[in-house]
Length: 186
Image (cartoon, rainbow, N blue to C red; front, side, top):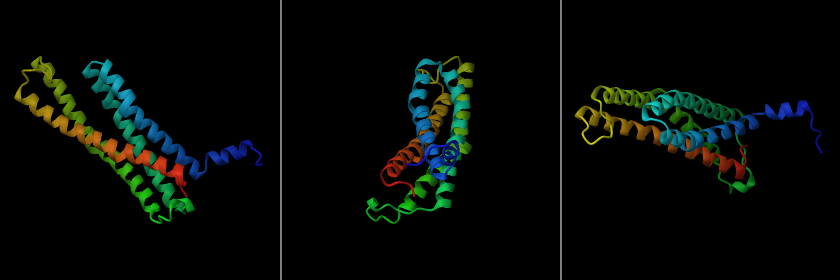
């Protein structure tokens, strides 16, 4: 039996595998919280402008974190390589699958951070400004043509952002967690 010491705990805590697994756990947990529980609660209980202001501050930090952690995991995987367990049914290309998933997670988060997210936020604030100047709501019956145009743009960019987060980040993260749980990482 291995004796547990402070030094052994530090060694385990700083090992690349531990860092990888911790980063994966933080990514999955954050994505589930931001995308479902936290986001839905704020949406239901805050006035739309306040919800938008919070999301405008929260989401860039979220995308920075998950992009950084995904890139860290990809770097760890490149550095350590991969050897498969026998239980993987001989699928020798799993290294590429894992790297593809990690690359997808990183890239989708960076796209959301640097382009889609800011564009969505810009359109959202334009809607809020137009609502204030027109004294109307973006989802009201008698919306102006300008508001209809902004609504369409916002819906498009919001759908792209949500899709990138869900299918480019969250689904691969969960799959990666299931994969490494079954076959191990290296």
